[in-house]
Length: 354
Image 1 (cartoon, rainbow, N blue to C red):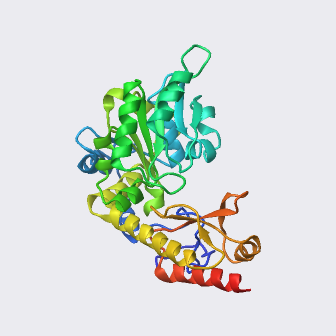
Image 2: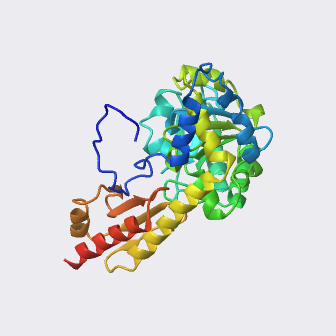
């Protein structure tokens, strides 16, 4: 280990299922950062790594793709949505979307956008909901829908098929709306579906994408990916105004090169998905535990008896998704192991037995 004056302040052997943000960075990502660290490079994206970044994204998303690295997913979503709306515009999204539940009002506060939430049981939205929302906003008294935002995978762990996304995009475009995808877990969805990244995005009519890195092995960073430049305005200026123009951008860009040039994105996502499937199968076999949603990506939603959950919380930090239902969300990461999953399952089984 390199010499440092910093102090190790956590147990490296501890594993959490709270979030896929709890994991560290993949070793290949850390190696890429060390590779890019030597010498000097121009700042603010004028470096040689950022200059080649579009090439990496175009191999996965088509010849028109342009990539704009930012620090985090909320920033990616807010900047992307600003770039496809006017001051009077509104965004159609699922009522459980990250935009509405987990971004602290950033789309409204920073971008001044109205979020129009669409009802959904499984985290997905459908064309008929878009039709109804556009019809309801038919006069000057309503915020005007200008974009649709969908998440792949959704906040409830479900994955749109390419056919479903294509139908949504066709409906949105017929109404003159732009289509944005929150792809924080796009890699997990593509791995689950067994398709390419473009099959869920460019080929289905997505216009602009927030592409996730942090949840799939990066140290930090996400990318705004413009897929249809004719529908997007001013990303470079919006990124700067929104405080997401990195001065040492080479360290953002080189991570995405490492993720995308080979198959690291799919390896990491497939492993996380496999661990979630193992966890879901193990927990569903225990009396008193119910898996409440399809396990399609790297999340498992379950309900446990209240007393058992309270005891489990003494051992693990767990995210409660629906307090009324007693539903919790468990997330697996690229570095979750079979041993981690089995240990968690054994802890649940021991608690239930008492």
